[in-house]
Image (cartoon, rainbow, N blue to C red; front, top):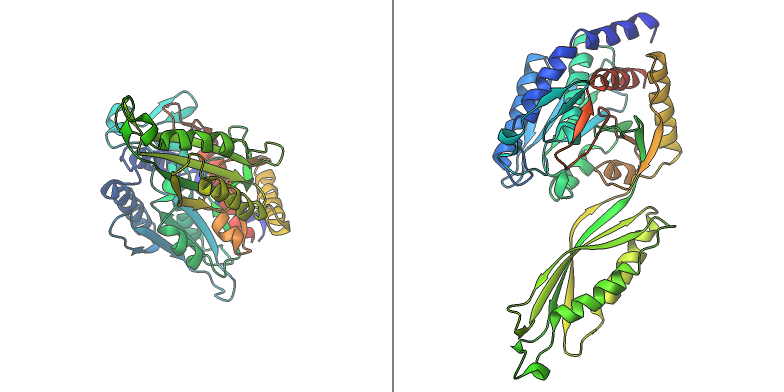
Amino acid sequence: MDADPEKALAAWFAERQDAMVALLADLVNIDSNTLDKKGVDAVGARIIHFLDAAGVQSDIIPHETFGDIIRATVPSGDRNNAPVMLLGHRDTVFPSGEVSRRPFTILGDRAYGPGVADMKGGLVINAFVLAAMAALGIARRPVVGLFTGDEEIASPWSRDVIAREVAGMRAVFNGEPGRPSGNVTVGRKGGLFMRIDVRGRAAHSGSHFSHGISAIEALARKTIRLHALTDLEAGTTVNVGVVGGGLTLNTVAPDAFAELDLRYIEPSERDRMLAAVQAIVDEEDVAGSSAELTITGEFLPLVQSEAERALYAIYDTAAVSLGCHFGEEFSGGCSDAGIPCAQGIATLCGVGPVGGGSHTEEEYIELDTLLTRAQTLALTVARL
């Protein structure tokens, strides 16, 4: 690819910077909590409207409970080349009504609003890169955009769809926000979300105390042992983040529950740590009690192999040619990037706009990076 098409590509985005911000405002100003299918699909409808106007073909993979998946495709002249995927999710963690309380806002060089970084900014970049490839026809490979709707709860439905759709891809770029440092994400922890249900036996805590079997006591003992599994040096953490149970203060608790988060770096740690957690759950900490462990969600780790390093090098070279540089960073957070990585497909995450404060009221993006990250991603895709 010679210099003139690259200059035309960068200029194409520069001329549409205001349009990118306008689309971002539209997407942020739609409530789209994961469990709000109507809202998630409304975000999808706005994206489809944009893609249609840009001449990008798209279709829908429907679901009754979660937001439908949108699959967009820009063909290339050489169908024998493996495609490239741009991946992103439309759901946010914020409840319905959040947008009316704090809509999309620009203050100085930053844009704010629910989901502006995680990850509606990345959705805008992905949509515009698809539009640029369709308009300029410079991609050597087909480019596929996949817009999902349940990532914030560990992609219980879209995980299998992503795994199927990425098969045979040359590379996958996940549009999660860039790190506050400006870096892209080259590695992520894997994560298991679990629930522990403990059963005991109720009894009056005054007159029949010894007849009771306290599920809360059993859970408390397990919690201490579970937290002791944490190994910060190895990057493995175990956190009981939610607990509940019992009937009244004068009743020995017949039941209790906990929600547990396990994070790890090395894929081999997954099974070892899960076995350790299971052993603690199975232990009869209070005589007569029992407990059950349920996996409620899972993210696979993004491991920086040679394929990921080579992909980052292409991305970095593209950025430098545009007068930018985005470094590498590891994140303890999880994302869907682990799904293609687990299949041996070169994957780069955090290629969305630079931002921070995700999942909080302070969530923001650096507005100028909406343009520079879009240009860098488009140029990387064109050079592959």
